Image (cartoon, rainbow, N blue to C red; front, side, top):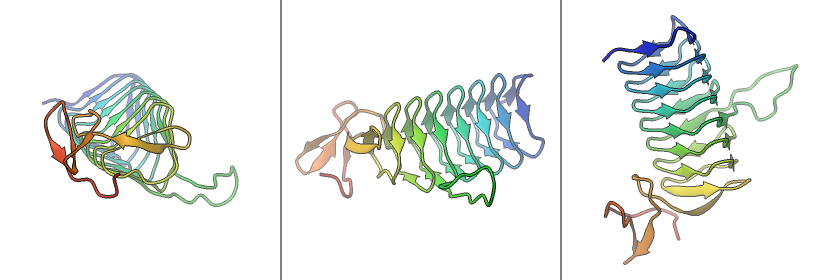
Length: 182
């Protein structure tokens, strides 16, 4: 599978791009960024230096992913979401990057802000417009400002229901035992 890069995209020669990945209009991929196989990088996306993105990720239009973000596979990022990387940004003085970890299967809604230093747990879902200020557990459904747990989701994206002591997905039939869930 060929890598496709739109002529208006800027991709550093030092970036590593996986087979089958598409990079669309006006995207910018910085040096030493690593993007996995079969990813789709939308229009106007900015991927900073040393960012790591796993396989099969879908990164919608106009997203900023700054230095310090490490992302697993199968991640969906909705349009215009952003990842910060400094708790105390100033135009002068020291710049201290604080890392953010995005585990496999995470979905982030449009216009969400992910404050640095947090982990988005496997298969969690972040609602559109949310501001994530703390770690999100695996399979948690969070939304709001600040984002708070409002439920639990299956890896297929459907909301889970409590059934016989386990969390059950009516859509795909899977059961889940989730730590720290009510």
